[in-house]
Image (cartoon, rainbow, N blue to C red; front, side, top):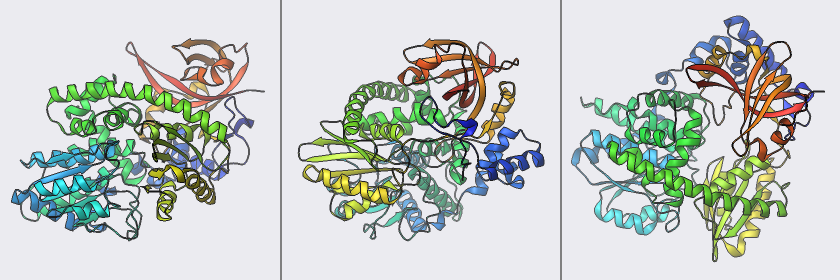
Length: 584
């Protein structure tokens, strides 16, 4: 539990947040780590927050995938799924891959297509259209695929698709998924899903691509048992890393090891699709987890949101650099189109949500003609602004299709699934942090009221504004490149493992200038010779820019994350400023 006192006495910062530091217990653990390991105290603060004991620090900072990767056979149906997959390969059967249209689905499909290519086989890729077909397998598509294929692999979907799976007569269906399962499973040949109700749940944090990867690990084990070898699976971890981050899976345990290993593979620039994607995103250095989530992932998603649904999967699967460049350029253009559509829906949704009130356990909005490809992103924006679970729905006549995003500690997927079970939704499902739903227009208000009630029981809405959690206090002179590099070793950071955030007390603003339309660059000093540069992105979209630019010589407590800024052969530490409060 965090210290009850506001950190540095900041009860309400410029952005209205209360600053919270580490608990007394975590601070003591950080001190013990620093003394036992001679590592910098700020690094030890991050390790202590993650619950790392002194004797575990070395292994945590250099995690080995072989030590953390679970036994694939610990999941129900895994041996059966891998055996059927290999049987289809060896017999030369016709294989189809039915994938969701997001990054996780695209990466999952690409893993299978890549593996099959190495084995000298090809497969049919099928990605449903978001608008015309919606999420997951549907009866017409599965029936048609079954007439021309012997095996259909459903990835990142299928767990709730009873009728579509039954419609695939004449073909075996293997489901590799991670979405919450119901009490009964489809009549498939195998359903591998760590979120089946008969699973222990200790692997429920895996994304679908990680589940597919585990299936390929099991396939490799079965191959070796017959004296044969499969492709190099380590070379495929770049896809698993991208999917894990983009699907907002918590970066703990094996997920953290998978992402670290995948980021290392990306440095070699061997996969044409990811190389082309990084180039159109104008990344000047090898991707980190932030780049996966905010630069690469949205572009892969753009095809499924506002363009051709299979573009992302095709980009990730191709081994042709020319094709990769063309697909990446197309996705980059679609991503710009998506931004414009999103902005219009966001403004309308926010106005509607504000009129309805932002204090309820659930923040929601619905509008006629809102593009279903952006409602999930807009729901995420509303969640970030309100610290509430949020749902945004695009209406099309008598029916609405929506997407929701949740906050820590509130299981949105389970609530949506219960709502579907009660008959208030046409269909719905997902996982803890995200969910999708389809609702009849005449039951919209009733369904959202019931969802709000279910989420309130989980504690949604208990806090109006999110607190700003800080790991430690620093002075500018302590913010060295060496410290930043040490902190990076404790990453990658993302969902479930937030990047370290530090408070710098009572700094004077020496220079402040606006950059672009809404950003602010600052030079800060502590009055004792210590200086640090800072940048506040989007500062003029909120209260930070208008107060910090005309600072008038005032001193501020500032908080943010440390980054290395490489410019013209020089490296210096820069503070990505998240918040500030007047020092009194």
